[in-house]
Each structure stands twice: as C-alpha cells, then as structure tokens.
Amino acid sequence: MQHETHAEHAHHDQHTQHTQHTQHTQHTDHEQHEGSGHGLGKVSWSMAAQATLHCLTGCAIGEVLGMVIGTAFGWGNMPTMILAIALAFFFGYSLTLRSVLKAGVGFRTALRVALAADTLPIAVMELIDNGVIALWPSAMDAHLSDGLFWGALAVSLAIAFVVTTPVNKWMIGRGKGHAVVHRYHH
Image (cartoon, rainbow, N blue to C red):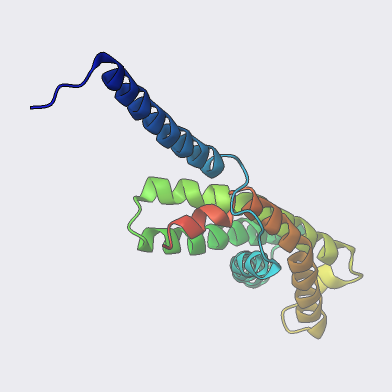
C-alpha cells in the first residue's frame, strides 16, 4: 500500500481543481456562445429567403382568401383588407405551428415559437404588401376577375418578399425568428 506524502497529495488536489476549472471554463464558454445572441452566426441569404418564402405562403393564402370572402360578401376595401391581414397572420402562424407540432412539441410551446418566429416578418410583409396595393392606382377597386387585381397582388408580394428577407436574415443571425423553428426540426 502506497502512502502519498502531504506535498504529493496537495499537488494532486491542485491538478484535479485545475482540470475541473478548465472543464468548467470550457462549459461556461459554450453556454455563453449558445445564449450570446449570435444565433446561428453567419446566415446565408438562401436560409433567410426560405424562411421568408414560408411567411409569404401564409400571407398569400390569407390575402387571397380575405379578398375572396370580402368580395363575395360585397364588403368595402377597409373591412376586406382587415380580414385579409388577419387571415395572413392566421395562416402564417398556422404553417409554423404545424411544423413545430410535428416535432413533438406541446401546443403552448409551439404557439409561442410561432408567434416569436413570425410576428415581425409577417407584419413587415403585410405592411409592404398592403402599402403597395393601397398606393397602386385602381388596385384597391380591382375585382378578382381583373388582371389588375392579380398583377398588383403578385408585384406587392414580390416586393414584400424582397424587403422581408433581410429582416429574416437579421433575426435568424441573432437566434430569433425561424432560427427558433429550425431548432425543433432536428
């Protein structure tokens, strides 16, 4: 049976503490990196465009359905636009909610993720989309059977896509928006 001298024991304790401290420091550095707001770091334009396309899909469904319903009921421009915006948010959130729920997340958590991921991008998209339509001469008065309606809608959604993509890139780069949704897909 070997006996350590007091000096050897003290040296062993210092080595163990140093090793634990180094491991703790590395662990702490990792935690700081994860929660530092750097998010995914360098985010590609492709990733941002894909997130924006996801928002655009929900917005387009809501916009068209809102216009169809408003026109079918003979509503004026303002109530129809309000319905279209509400439905754009509903469908935008629903698409994200569906994909997060598929990952096995509870409804409340999935709803919070969808709200956090999509509120700003959909708001920007709707502001641009509806702003273009409102400023386009005669677009607000176009009917579903008019080429002007579909042309103005297509151009407004394309402009909204271009403006919203940098917003999504910025959010994803900081670990927000669709970066949060992405965590549940893996």
